[in-house]
Image (cartoon, rainbow, N blue to C red; front, side):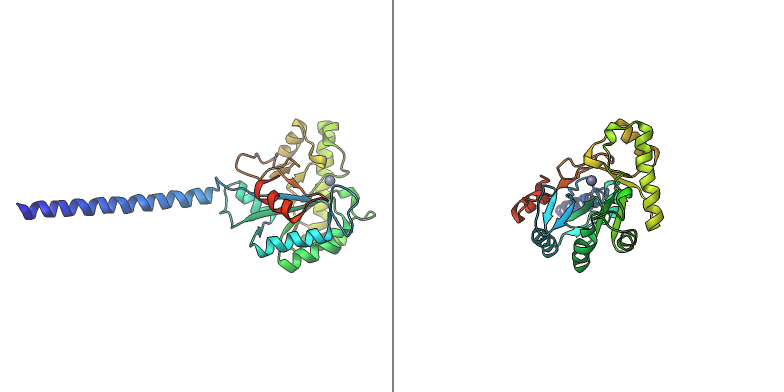
Length: 259
Ligand SMILES: [Zn+2]
């Protein structure tokens, strides 16, 4: 009798142990599912413009500060994302790497090629350049061949419209043309598809959203601050503007808090 009871008791303990292990395993499975679904990512998307030795305006970053910022990201093991990696993350198609960050640069400034690109190359970093197609080859802007070169070397070259006008002051047809003309010009230079738009001045309206949908765009970037999370919709993705007064302290705050 006693032995039977002990056996039963022992078996019951084993069963309970097995249940616990199963529960742990199930918990691990759902944890890994949650991870691959990326329900909890928080990604800073930085928006730079021009990088200059001496700043003379708000939307400029001093070269010394920029070097310090990139060195900080490198030594603190941030993962600079390609735009395609970023797209996959927000669409739950891939896992989130450690310390993800998306670096974006607007307006095809020539200093991107002469100053930024060599620094990114040195650190093996990826970035996105949002190009205004009518400005290519203009004074202080990158040439066609420079844009083609960066596009083949870890820089995603994407759309910032054909002439940088406010989309919100245009009809649907005009907006569609401003976006599509730029995409055709950029694709003819790089040979790569153009599926993301940075709204000039961050300004968009319902017609802009409709044009992006019609053109099957995968992403639309604003200049609203904040970290990119699963609560952001694909055509209203936030970007953190980098400005002339940023110090390493404000840089760290921006990549941590999104503002
Ligand atoms: Zn711009």
